[in-house]
Image (cartoon, rainbow, N blue to C red):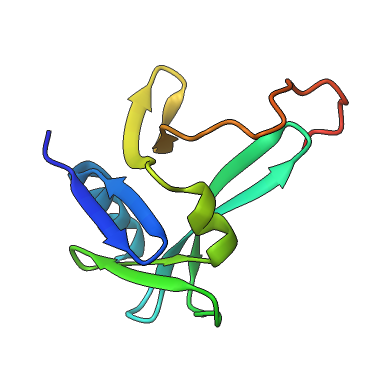
Length: 117
């Protein structure tokens, strides 16, 4: 399968053509100023990856265009997204966007505190 590889400044991710196609479907009625924000948040159980529609570009954002889809990534998330693949998958439990190749947190421990983060 052909992949679209993005190397921009501090951002090094791959986006599959299927993910780009599904993004275009999701953005069809959103307007030209709306992009897809890829973000990482850290909790005691390690990193969590997410996507959101966003029309605001912040000062530290990396903005890239992948085959007509605008992606927004803040500098904190860009460091943690190096080498990941953004894909779209269907499973018996549902379908949606997935981040593959994500690195575990540097803490090296499982989640045992029960806080959900």
